[in-house]
Image 1 (cartoon, rainbow, N blue to C red):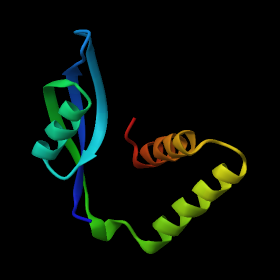
Image 2: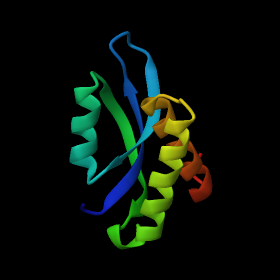
Image 3: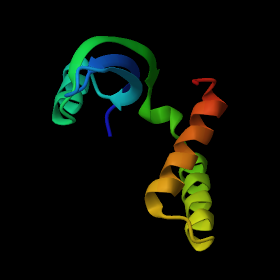
Length: 96
């Protein structure tokens, strides 16, 4: 996996509403591709943080998998479990 960056973005959806969010992407071209695949028209974007592969230690990976397994065993759907883990990681990183 290549290094990825966290991008904050704003885009216009198919109803003409301004929406915003965050995505991990390899570069701004990759970000724009992901947004257009979601039928969003990008308006602005900014690189917030670079996540280097070497920062993602084996212990982080195993902790994440164990947490995911616990949530799934508790009966939460996969999508909800992943969303909860993503939110927890953002909070730990100080990205809200």
